[in-house]
Structure formats: C-alpha cells, structure tokens
Image (tube, rainbow, N blue to C red; front, side):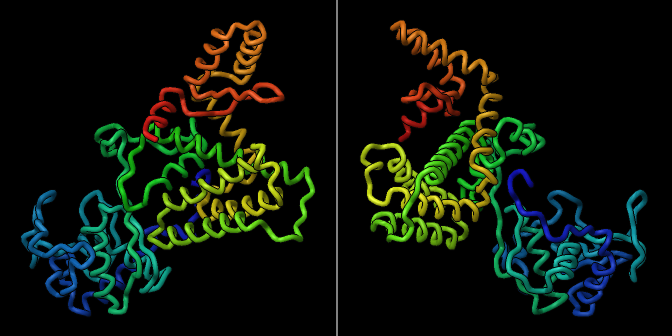
Length: 400
C-alpha cells in the first residue's frame, strides 16, 4: 500500500480490544427496545426499526433469510440479525451480561467507528457487496444505539474483473498487488485503477495495465524534460504569462475541480491533463513551440499545475528521474531483456543503417517493439523508451 502511495490509516483497531465498547452498544440497543435476548444470543429486531432497508432500497419481504445458512427458528423475524452469539466449543469467547460469547458480524464496525470517530462522521467506504446486509445492519444498530448517528457519504466501490470475469479465489483468477508490482511500477497500477470511476466495475487486463504504464512514462518524461530545460535556462518570471498558457492552466484547474467534485470522477481528472501535456511537448520539441514568447515561463507554470494534480491523485513521484528509471527497469523485466542487450541491438541497427541494410534495421526495431521497447532516433543518436508491445499499440491505434 505504501508503494502505491496510499496514506496509512490513523488507527487500525482490533475487535478483540474493543469488546467492552461492543457490549455497551448492545446494552444501549436493548434499552431502546430494538433487540431481544434468546438463550445467550442477542438479536436485532428489524421490526422495531422502521428505516431498515433505506440504504439498499430493499424491503423486508425481499430479505430471504436462510439462503446460505439455516434460519434460526427463535428469531421473531427471519431478517433479524445477531448482535451477540453464545459461546460454542472451539470458538473464542468473552464474558457478557448474557453469558459467555462473541460479537456478531456487524456490531464491531458500529462500536469501533463510534469509539474513534463519534456517532456521526462524513465518509464510510466498502465494496458494493457490503451494501446489504453489512452496511444496512450497521446503520440500523448504530441508530438504534444513538438516534443522532449519521454518515454523510457512503462510498461503495465496484468489483474487480479479470479479462471480463469476476476476480475470485474460487475461480483461481485473482492477482495480488505484490505480484503486479514485480512487473509494473506501483504508480502505473495506481493510474490504471484511477482510470475507472470507483463505483464502476474495473476490468483488469495486462493490455490495460500496459496502457497505464505507457501513459505514466509519457507524463513523467514530459515533466522531466520541462524540469531540465527550466533548470538550465534562465526565465523571466516578472512578466505575465501568454493568454493561451493562462487559458490552459485555468481549463485544467476547472476540469479537475469539477470532475473530482463529481463523486471523485478520477478518470475525467486524468484525461484533463492530456491537453496541457501535449502543449508542453510542443513547447519542448517543435520548431514552432521553441519560438513561442515566454516559452520557459509557460513550461514552468504548466508543470507546476500538473504537479498539483498529480499530488492530489497520489501520482507524484519523489523524483521524475528515479520514476522514469524504475519504469524502464520494469519494462526490461517484462521483455525478459537486459539494457546491455538493448544497447547492443541499437549498435547493430546503427551499423545496418550505415551499411544501407534497411531491412535488417527495420527487423531490429520491430523485434524490440514487439516486446515493448521503442527506439527513438534523434540528432544525438538512438535511445530507447518503454512502449506498448507492438500488437497492443496497433490495437490501440485502431480504436482511435
């Protein structure tokens, strides 16, 4: 998670350290007549909580108990759920006013969040499969314990699919983050994940991960080139920026703020960087761009704005140079090739071109392109960069 630049939690509580808080909450629910005791078990009474089902939109008639476990005939309503379970052989247990037992599957979340965040807080997250029954039950027991309990925003993420099939242990098609970042830069994975709105299902494919990695390299290379040229050449920061540069900066600001304010629409926020990055590349590398008035000042201002966007999205590396080198190393690993061999191939191709053996030269370029190594010819010779493997690049171009 640290590699993906996810911020660490402020608190990581354990249920076993908060059994007293859980018992106290259950007592409060019983006092408010929203629960009942049956032979050492305590059940929540959904009939005594009229708002039950508001989050999921389900009616009590829809809650078909017993589909996965046998119905407890002692329940007053089949939809009633356990707050406390009497101890069973081989299970951990704690003393309680209702005898030895353990908490139910939902109450610990209500008790621990109330303990650390209070009865009302802004954001509660989880997968969409938790909307019912887990989060529905959380709302019911929290409000039954404290009528002022509220959550302002429920954030439910969509499922992860692999090649359009749901990722699951039973199908054996799951992929761990540790496994992915053996071959890809962690921030390439982060960019891939941010490329889909969090509420939508996300389809994990190697092809899409390659696209994200290629886009990340392009972004960092642009910013690195900008950083270098601005460091080595003197700019005049006292004069105002050209109107078109100010327009690009304002447009990025507005699109980013609007998309992130629209339920964290990160995919639109990422797309908003495309135009400023293209403008920067024009200023850096085209004949027309190099002649533009206030070129360095424009580059510096655009880089600064994109840096802010990347920082908010958790995509800003500690160093563009280091990140680019890491992306190159991962590309070599995916291609099962060493940098020494790439350099050797470049030298062979250069020799072939000098000898006018253009067919051999093209074969070397295509050989490397097929495994995601692109050769870049320039005034100072040939360099290489990671790229989409050739068949995938052709497929992307066909779609556009």
